[in-house]
Image (tube, rainbow, N blue to C red; front, side, top):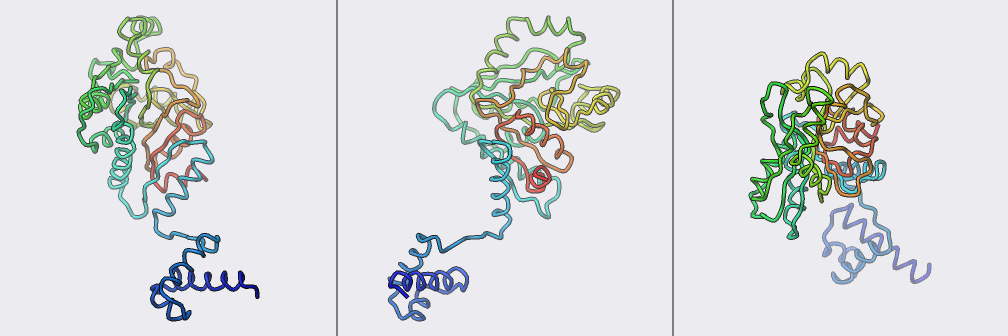
Length: 314
């Protein structure tokens, strides 16, 4: 055995005793007949030589592996997966909200003036609630979606306003109902000077945060009065599995052809966006909708849960 082979053999033994056997450097030194400093160098040498392969069995390690796989599969620039095993639905959504708030804070704490595009969703609202108040009046929060229902009421989940309150910045509301009464009515809303000013600002957003909605009888768009049960049934029959700020998606991620499209006033979505578009969504009922958003390339970042990530990757 060469001198180099001998050294590698000793380094491997030291690493095994340290990482697998759980022995201290003092114990390793005594067992190998070397000084404690030499034992320390042997363990470091084993790492540098590529002899040590670390496997983390904790759920966080599994989540990190899922994050890497999601980034690779869907070309995401950002992905965060929270542990889900044994958690209640409420606990799961809270975990996503906390993780989402941490991601948001990375952008909000930046010094340069930032335009923050904000979509809709209960999970998104919960994440903004988790944010600490920061004094960043240089930032602007811009709504991507009209908050007015057919009966004139406004949604309780007006999250762009909440974001502006957290940052002490300016808030730009999209002055229109989510769905206009007709195609002609939509033209009137969308051609208004204020609408065009706000939608142009939204298109310049430096980062966008949004939720991903489902299409079902108990979905938020139905509960909040934006869609009737008959419209939900038609969308489902057309293959819609999810939506983002009112844009309906099929299982393949492509836009669903619906008469509602011609009346939608939300800011347009762009596939493969060149600036961060980060979605916060999780839970069993969201699996198909999240996968659709990923397949369509509508988002470049995702904060979700472990079970959702596993289901999406299947």
